[in-house]
Image (cartoon, rainbow over all chains, first blue to last red; front, side):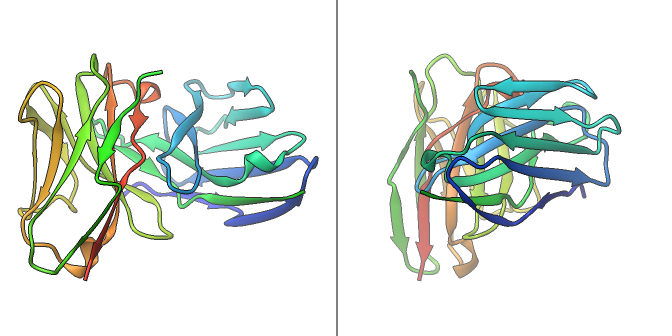
Length: 113
Length: 114
């Protein structure tokens, strides 16, 4: 089945540093989604990407949809303590008419004040 | 902002017991989903529901699982005879359309099977 591989699995950074994480797949995805999950809560959508090569920003977050459609990255600039959480990439299953989302295993971000 | 609400937040049950997890999707949403997340692992799709029927289900969603929309507001997931490996966070989600960017997740129910 489709798998999304995220790296790194976890990161410890100093407040104010920039963060970069990525997501790769052996399959082509037509949509890439980045979610953040904080403890005790459900995933919250951060950025949605729909076109190969697309670069989209949401405040301090920037995400890109890779040209090959098999990868995406998420950057966070000038990290702050509330950026702590698990960041998941996700994409729709390729089956026709499918509503399934496939998630990566996540990148756990810790920010040291 | 409207949100998906799930109850209970934590459910402890004995192996073999039936459990019902409840969700109230956002009121004008038409598509409903259940996902689960085993501790420390990725979020996995279970089932999608539209127009009062299951539109899609994963291999995880076997005969022990069922979903229902008993009235105009609730969406439930029933596990008939729980197993230890059913212990996980169960997330309900809903969307106004089938587009993924409009998917809203609830805060989850943590199910612990002992």
